Image 1: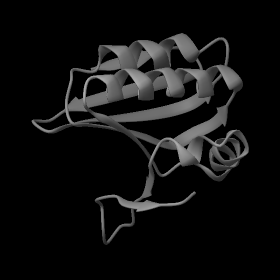
Image 2 (image 1 turned 135 degrees about the horizontal axis):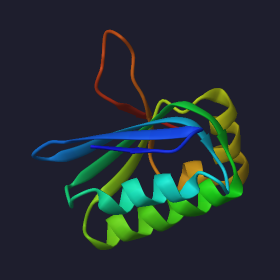
Image 3 (image 1 turned 180 degrees about the vertical axis):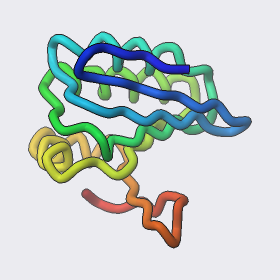
Amino acid sequence: MAERSERFDVRMSVGEHAVDMWAVGEVDLATVGTLRGALWAAPPRPVLRLDLSGVRLLAATGVRALVAAHLRIRARGGELVLVDPDPVVTRVLRATGLHRVIPICRTTPTRPECDLVAA
């Protein structure tokens, strides 16, 4: 399943215990609806992993979408985990304090699963 706009694309894979999403592009006022739509369309699972390695820009509207998704997923008993944010996105997560609220993990080629880290 994929959501797409001109400057932003989200792909989703649904597993038995987790939903994995890969976001690519810029998250701003023009594209946040695509991200929000994908997050809301994800079926309930214990974990939703959102890979942000391909996101070059995370504007305030994107931060608000992540907070809303975190609250919604948590209310259903699940957890939103941000995976491999780009350094620019990591700075936004740190500046907003979101790295203290939503778990962030890094993957490596030798360990494709997430190791939680303090961003």
